[in-house]
Image (cartoon, rainbow, N blue to C red; front, side, top):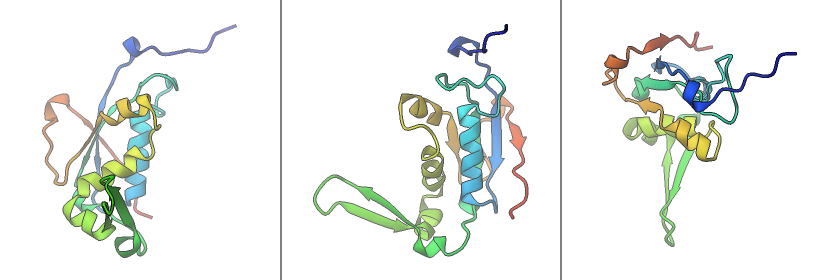
Length: 147
């Protein structure tokens, strides 16, 4: 009888992928990136090992939000001082902090532990269409239409 394959961190091979977020819904971009960062798209996926790949997301400034999310969705930060709550709308985040908006969406879809923090370090988000990772020869990922 064959035993179950368990990958170790020494045997992991990592690839680089580029996701173009232009006119794609934020949730679809984030969920696809999270799957690749975790390594769940590989047959060698092992839950307790960081076996995911690197992800580059370009055109973050042009990501789409459906419905009334631009006006209604709020992002909150707190400085941990009294009265230190800062709130921003999704419209303000998209205009001024588009990279952070995508990073938050992806980070929320990763495990909330040491392993998730390790996976999150392999995410690179850029507002424009240029990125400095051409030497890694990233593969372009297609995400289907914007239904």
